[in-house]
Length: 452
Image (tube, rainbow, N blue to C red; front, side, top):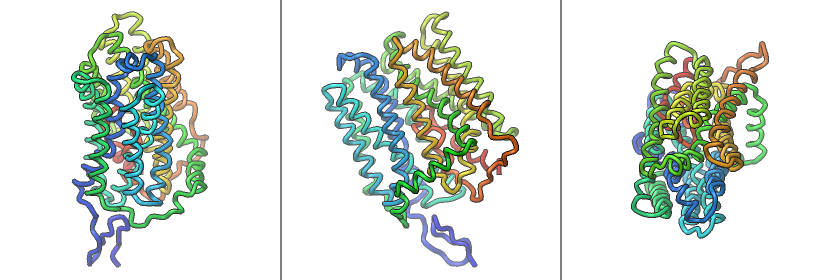
């Protein structure tokens, strides 16, 4: 008897069945654009934040809140858009959420005061979260194994390029126009993406089940995850580590543009240090993973992150405030995260193959929540520099304390999954907003295979 793959509807024996509805290259391009809309909307905007203080005659704290509400909208939406697409189909849910994103971009573009700008950014966060969940679902609907890994690798490449280039693009746009042009660019991106979905993306969810959207069923899955000490430990470490990166996105523009004196274009170029550091870190981690277990890299990554946080706390006090004073410690932080991500991501997801989508969504919610919390706390400090010097060491210490203190009970058996977790369940869970890039996208799948 031939074995039929229910996802791709192809057969391993004699005879043929239905092929994937789209080619790997088409899914990679469309999925990559869906994924990048979130990080592009975040990082393209950051060079304009000091300009917005003057434009709205407000203070830094209010402008920082535009990042916080974006994070909050993204975090909450991430928990629900995946189940909704399982229940009602990928196309209608994707178009609905990207429609919300487009409305948010228009509201922000036409904002006359801070309340409207905050509302627009919150709607953008809600809408763009669908890109992560639904792009992953579209891949899983059609591909498994090596084909899935190939598609996700291409998507990961776009996720790395988007946040690395968008601050520079934002800075260049601000060199020829005011902050409104950024939301024009985001609106164009949203319209093009919706057009591609209408014209090029057929419905890939062949068996929608409205029962999957029942709140009781969703909450049951999240309850199972929150009762797991293994899941909480790994997810909280990632929440503090990556939450620190998202907090940096709120604070660093004011420091480098207002205090150091960079232009928006120069700021965009400086932020490429962050992405390049993560790329180098993933390459080093990838080499090490061939010889050591991924979990053994986590303490070293935490130490590197703590070194970066210490540099951000002490460096500006004893050295002249320059781009290097800020970006070199940030480079240490993101290099360390490349060591933390593989072990924590696979540990959190490996025991929950039956609810891998929920596990990925909850992990992402906790990470974005960490960034939201850090961004919200930053408004309590008199200056962005003082917030940076306090919050980043606190988050690094919290990550270390969680890793070393929140250990599973002694003698508790590791929960072995009965179903192999697909590479697509591991992808994007580590950095849902793509702020640090996704150069190490294949590491998590390789690490999981070794743990098996």
